[in-house]
Image 1: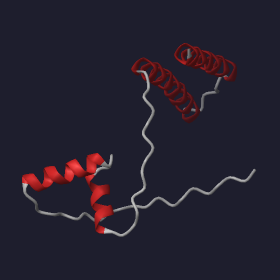
Image 2: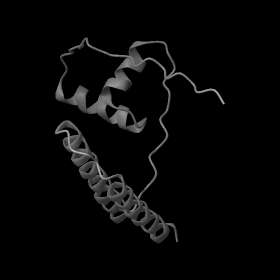
Image 3: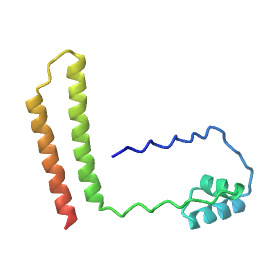
Image 4: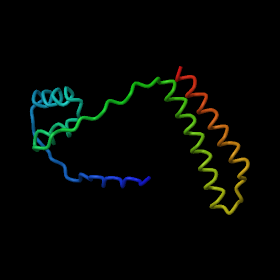
Length: 118
């Protein structure tokens, strides 16, 4: 299976400043929100002839699930940081302890997903 090459990221460095009244700004913001876009995206669409692409709405996720996954991600970051610190200091990394921590984290994530998948 071949991997797709990532699209080159478009970097927008220039800023277009427009003077407007509060009423105009509110009107433009309202129109942008109606199309579920930022004001920048809306203005870019209006000023160009390119059709505006719609983004898929992010799924509604239980805040408790987000918090639990965030805690697990924090644990993973702490493990990685400890590994990098030990490696830079020339200390040997205990692969068995590392594997045990990662397996515990994997079980924790599986339990989180199981609870929130019901």
